[in-house]
Image: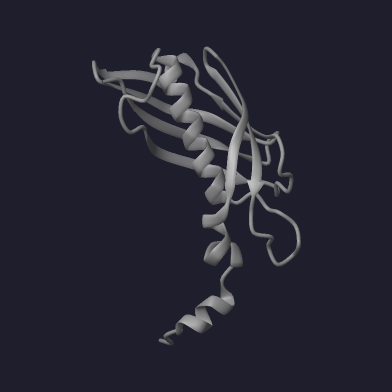
Length: 150
């Protein structure tokens, strides 16, 4: 078995994972909620330009913002003005069907039907298999969240 040294590893890795990913700055420009649904629009404020010269919304960044959707929706749905504790992304299953290259108003939607919400105790709610759609189906899948209430 061959062992790669640091230089050999770095030659094969994506620049954004080595130096750029930690430098990304993104934020919600808008969040809309109603029972069973949340939509957030993400603006990418800063990123490292990939080698091909075109921004690509990464799978890693998508998972972070999907987690934020779950946090906001779970708190809002349980009438919490602030997080009571750490909200956990329990599982996620995503398909990345096409690239997302835009940097403004990237759409993240979460569908939380009534049957996906289960109160586990006075202190904890579980949302199972919320449907996630990013940028009109570019990324799609399901995610589950644990939301503390106290």
